[in-house]
Image 1 (cartoon, rainbow, N blue to C red):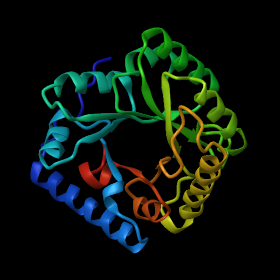
Image 2 (cartoon, rainbow, N blue to C red):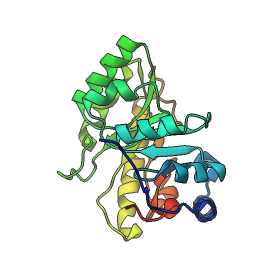
Image 3 (tube, one colour):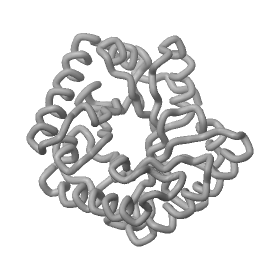
Image 4 (tube, rainbow, N blue to C red):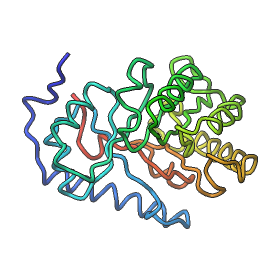
Length: 248
């Protein structure tokens, strides 16, 4: 299947630039209110279903990190945007095992390592191909059947396996909380992931191939709740609609 994107959409670079500036302002305000520094927060512009022209517009406005969910779509966009040398791609969500070889070693960060079979396949390929890949462990704190990710009680097992997988560099945790448009209702899930991160970085302090204490990343927060996520310690927020507008 060939991805065509919003073939009939008119891209407004000025609107995208203005939206991007507002998102950065909101991140900075949320970080200041929490006593933090927005310079330590990475904004990942979620560009799935958006045409390459929209990504170019955001890039021209200073954005460098972009997130895609579907491997075929990402490949097509990466080829079309290959002239942008410092563009950093993030793969969000579940990565099918037969797509591992297409992604590992080619993207800045994989946000959705979510099951042990996938971990084994990634570790095997990374060893055979002699590539390295930064990854985040997706945690399903609410244990929702509709979402992937390891349970909170299984997180240590995944971390221990990752510590023995030199081709995979665990950088932190990722969360898709139960959906609620009320950001206040979602906040406890962000706080709970931060608590898990804090426990893990104490337990595994000094362990080779794992982040140092204080260096574990938290990928959490989307267009409707990223300010609350920032308040709870997010290092990466994944924002699409607030930058590009509604998806079609």
